[in-house]
Image 1: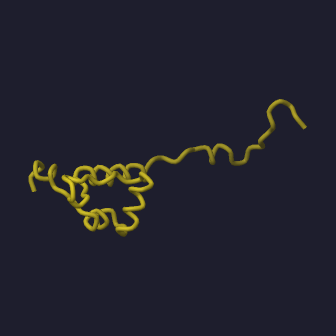
Image 2: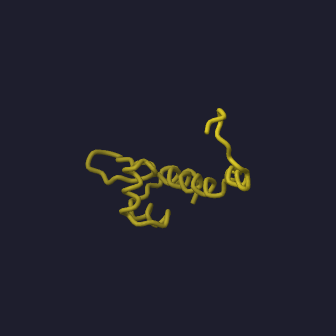
Image 3: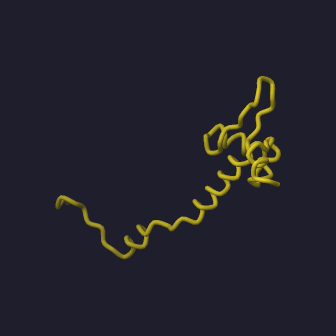
Length: 89
């Protein structure tokens, strides 16, 4: 499919749920919690839908976030005795 058509392609809730591998209810909850981008409504009375590039970008962002390097804090703190600051008790 040419890229120009991808820009205008709209996905309904079922298609979005399938694309992210979750249920429709989960996608609705993610939208409510602002974890997932909200749908658009092309005109009054139209079904709420998502544009293909928005869904694709969200999926790619999640993939990148999943593979971020972990914080070294746990490794740095292991085996060290922690002392209180200020010379307290």
